[in-house]
Image (cartoon, rainbow, N blue to C red):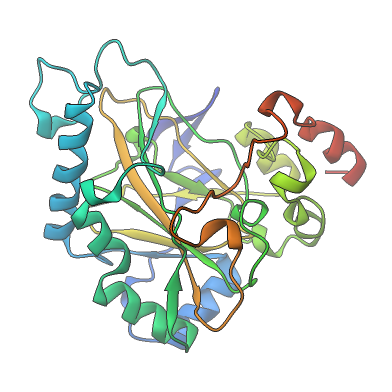
Length: 300
């Protein structure tokens, strides 16, 4: 077993509270089984979902940009992706960047293989939301537990997130961690899952404490040692966060959302220059209501 960190908590990967994601690679061509598994678990973990060579080319695109921004350690090879000693623990957000810098990421997101998969899975022509979330997370960074629905819930409920690391992402580097079956937790779904971060102005993370999630929603949690080309597809009501990056390298990933082109889409996430969540024209993050107050009301 490997000791990993989620915020201030430590867990043993392979123990009773943090298990391996169920691998659905063996039923990639069986769409009915895939739908059943996603309905049961809230996610599909698929090894080799993307072409590994394309992933490595996309990684080189991103590393070249990080190097140009001065974020990589000048004493290490660019391909190592080592964090500059003066960068700290911040996340480098690629979401608002010019995506022409990342031509291979574009192919990764909307290439023929990916779109063909979602066409079969949705039984409809697929559409990928225009707002893309690219991230390079430095040493010490982790993401609190949340559901994507609260950020993009003004369109169809048949919306699915695809998260993929851009390169290898072992557990020490801080990949995603999910709460399997949490998308079926009725109380969570009908309360926290109905928030809209722009409308309600509430802190977005249900919790930053993995122990709290296990005690409140149930366990075990699940993650994996991700290899180049692996992907995690999940329901936007699934509670998830990330492990802490305990390496000296950037954890690079990109997550995008897919739906039927025939279904309504959240207008904040589509168009030539989509804002995504948090239109901060009239308020600031300091104005957010503490999630603890809402959780007390909900009894969660």
